[in-house]
Image 1 (cartoon, rainbow, N blue to C red):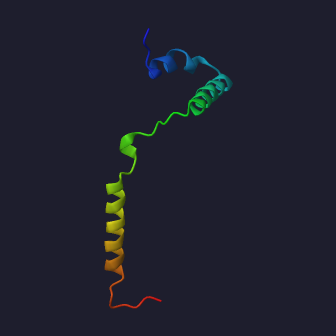
Image 2: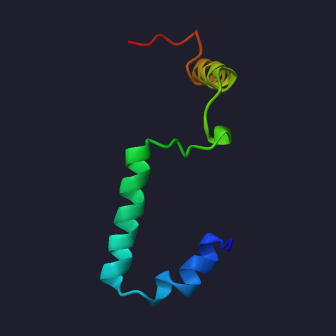
Image 3: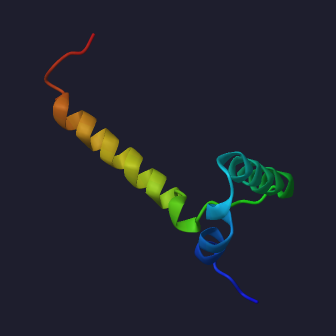
Length: 73
């Protein structure tokens, strides 16, 4: 029997009291922490090239707002 999270929520979890839903959420989150699961999507991480691009853009922007003709203290 394969259920999606939405089906389980609709059929079971939504019928629980607020206290029981919080208890269930705590159990689920604690289990995930114990398993040390990495749930970060690869697309959400910065590649080395992303970091280089950001640094390059930042330096170019700083150069454009602080021209060399101005002296900074």
